[in-house]
Length: 199
Image (cartoon, rainbow, N blue to C red; front, top):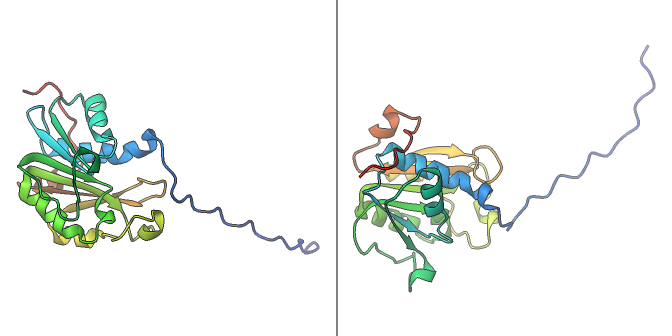
């Protein structure tokens, strides 16, 4: 015989989304790791240059040098390095690699910058951006202007994968374009470990 009905309980309120929170380096390092893995798969070595477009505090350089023991040439590109507007900026020269992490969603016309990066890359371009299929990109940060989907990046020739970059599964996209073609990564999805000390 069933017992008395349980008392009605009000469900707890949903946990508010943490917006506009500055994350620690260890939390941000997930984006540097996936970018470094993609460059390593494409053959990153100590002879190569990496231009970090939207470099911020140059943490990609820190990650490459401490975790990968990379000793190549690193060039930060950001507002603090000169009078730079990424809405109109063109790379002044060719680089082996161009990284653009957590930048394109801040632009009105991200495709213009992406094509400029591809034109200037000897070996490849790696991009990370929030995944609009999983998160509200515009609500994440008041300076976000344009959500960029995996489909849009694929149409530009990028191989894309999703990652936990902000605390939710598949909330971030890593996109990589290799001048040699995407067969590099399709052939070996597991990134090849960087071999430090290459000359």
